[in-house]
Image (cartoon, rainbow over all chains, first blue to last red; front, side, top):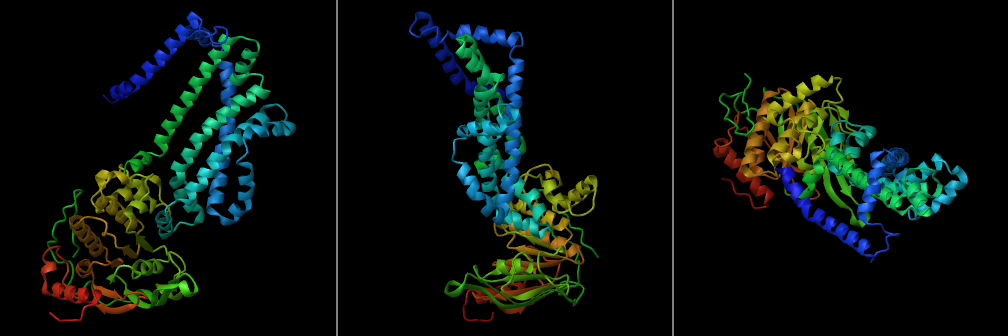
Length: 258
Length: 291
């Protein structure tokens, strides 16, 4: 019943999407849109299916996901650890805040050339770039969540005899989890962006590399097919994040309602 | 003789059937001081903007007694309780617990917050909230769960062990908080207007529950803070009256109502009515007229 209602609410959007695709199909076929630059969706679908059916997509997708996951994981771990330190300790905060605030506003893509100077063109540079791009939202949100922890919760920990460390891990960290997750969601988008960008700039495999490579060789259909795969990947990551969030912070929905 | 009053999940508190204690006395008789506030003062801010919340508060709480502090709102009752709990450092004076100065929350005292919605952990189930109090004890996971269940049963919530706090009503949430506090097996329970946020009927039920639990544990001392005179007279052995800011203790009364107390009958007892009358007059700053 619930599934049915949900499917029903998705229906108008899906119908509209189908209409847009149909319109594009028509416009490309009658020649309003240049087929050489934008092949009809049905043709792209055929190419896409070719990539999927013979398993061609597996290796490049694997490379992209490995890079994304490695960079994102580094960003999340560093962001949470540093955020806890900066949120709970004035000293650490005063020490690091100016440095953080001077790097944070910079578009991280601009730092890729610098990273190339020091780390070359290999995986270490790419992972660092992805981590750097997605680190700040996690950090900032963790700090905010830590500072926003209700004083009654902390006093509760104290009256039950918890020390500073125990309060940090048993009370502050879980209490900050909704904020941390919000930061992690923003970070996913940034990490994926930087993953594709570094693959275009320095990669020799992966989805970003293939999109650019196919465009340069004028294999336009292939380029669009890889873009479709990329879109699906992005969608799946977002769905997975939402699922994980609901599992880890089940009280969030409730709070919003009340 | 121990009372064996049980409370069910839907919170109908049965009237105690047998007197658990000698009429007129809270417990088996005069006991030594367990918790003592000596010349406690607290001011906030500095210089000309400083507000003095408490000034020269002396209070001795005896082992095993149920003591209540009442006072007009904003008089620093909660501050006083937090100082007693070691959660707030006094500006002057000191707190002695078991003849040792308090410099932080002692393991044997637990503070029950007025804001139960903020004090319970939303990421833990009801059972795990209670188990929180057991986590510093060297217990296995299974033993912890068993004990947590026992404390939940004490407040009549064993069926809700797997719920999350925010899925329960306000009164039930405060019961969870009470179970969690008891699970820490404190010698002193400090209760900060614990029932002020629940509806009138639930308040009566929770009062009866707390009295029941207190009377069943021979050695539990309760320091209770409220602005509700009826609540104070109904629950307490002794009542300390706090003045307006800067607050100090102006009076301590001992109504000596018989126990066990009855949620309805006790409130009609002439002694109850006389103390309610007197204390209300004091709190409202009216010229004293005896009944």
